[in-house]
Amino acid sequence: MPHNIAILGSTGSIGTQTLDVISRFPERFKATVLAAGSNVDQLIEQALTFRPALAIIADESKYARLHEALSPAGIETAAGSAALADAMERQDFDTVVTATVGYSGLLPTIRAIRAGKQIALANKETLVVAGELVTRLLADSPTRVIPVDSEHSAIYQCLVGEDPATVSKLIITASGGPFRTFTREQIEDVTPAQALHHPRWNMGAKITIDSATMLNKAFEIIEARWLFDVTPEQIEAVVHPQSIVHSMVEFIDGAVKAQLGIPDMRLPIRYALGDASRLPASERPLSLSDYAHLTFEKPDPEKFPCLTLAPYALRRGGNAACIINAANEVAVRAFLEEKIRFPEIYTTITRALDAIPFIETPELEDYVATHRATVTFTEELTGCKIPLRV
Image (cartoon, rainbow, N blue to C red; front, side, top):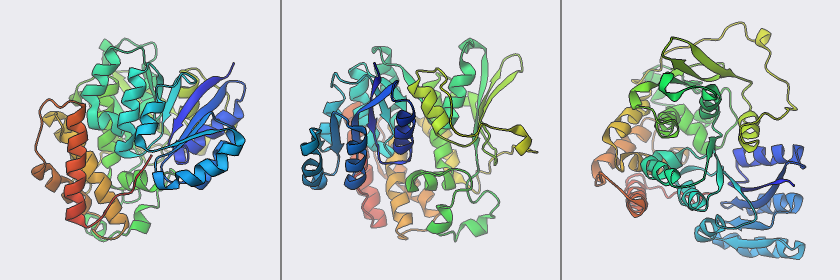
């Protein structure tokens, strides 16, 4: 029998690549639930192709179109964030791919953990926003989390068979984004079009901008702290422009293990869907003869100050990372709409950190309230409203 899967964010980059993997292994996997934010036409197309039991659109204004198109095919439909969260308790799937962007992944992921689902985690913000709460919930749940982000998947693979007590350091690689060789003066005036031109990866707009600011690397450091139960001092980032070494683990004896592969997200997706087993690939494998040089360099926090937000958030704790994430979601949208300049993404975040009350030991309702308060503050600050995303 195929392994039944729910995909949250099915119309995004990770979601569409997940469906591509499913289509290549129909005897092993079936998409049972598909959920999207507002791209109703693509969701309809996916649902008619993969025939899930349920299709969900977060944007309730698009529901009539979804229902009209899918009800004749016998596919159940729903709309809204509450419907998405409620769907995590269905009994017709056992694995959830959280491929949403931003804060929208938090509540359904928590519901999936409480329901005991297995999670292929591609939504780093879930652990960025509420890592302490999520890890506490995981301790009391049969849920197992296998990361889909290429960097965390690499670390996960490097740790297989190793004693966690022998880990000295996690080394997370970064491409450096499109502005790695820019001066600070050049970065002052970069445009959205320049920032969206990533040299290695094909990703959605939000994640691509986070790569350009290197906030995505700050988020990955925070996520790694919770995923792998290490101290903040045991995590560092290095710039690796070729994006072939996806991350490394250094051990107490001085040995370093690395996971290498072509920059293709289908590799970590296959690994996660296969429950940490290896499935054959259709794409051309890595040939080291194609890469005469693999280089590594230290990131420059003066050019990319967003990288400094990782140690700050981990040292501060509480709801600090939640504030950073929410402010960034608005700031990125404001930059894309040319309401703020590229360096103002960082200053918008720091102003939110100064303005939003700090909560030392937040519970779920505190994270929800913090997110809302931060979004409201930064929307007023930038003059930009963020759209609904799933």
